[in-house]
Length: 150
Image (tube, rainbow, N blue to C red; front, side, top):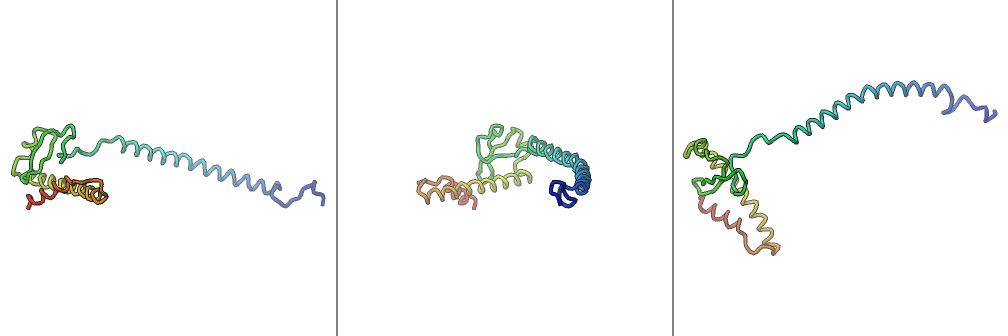
C-alpha cells in the first residue's frame, strides 16, 4: 500500500473526525449551558462576601474593661471594685444599681476582667521564665483581685 495515499484506519481518517466533531459540538453546547450558571454562582458568592465585609457589627459592646476606647468614656465600678467603661452617661438609667440587669452585667464585667488579666498573666509568666520581664504587673493585679473577690 502506498503511504502517500493514506489509509482508512488511524486518527486522521474522515470518519473519526466526523464523530469527534459531533462530540465537540455536544460538549460545547453543554459547556455553554453551564457557563451562565457558574457565572451566577460566582457573582452571588462575591456579592455575599462584599455584603458581609461592609456590614456593620451586629451591636456595640455595652462596656469595656480597659480604658482608652474613644466612645467609652464614662467610668463605673462594680460592687467588687472592678472598673469598667461605658459609652453613654445614661447607663444608670438603663441599668439601675442593684437591678437584675445591672447584677448580670457586673458579673460579665468581672468574668471578662479575670479572663483578660489571666491571658496577660500567662504571657508575663512566659516572658519572666525567658528572662525578659523582671516584674509581672498583670499577675499581681489578678492575685489582688482574687484575694478581694473571695
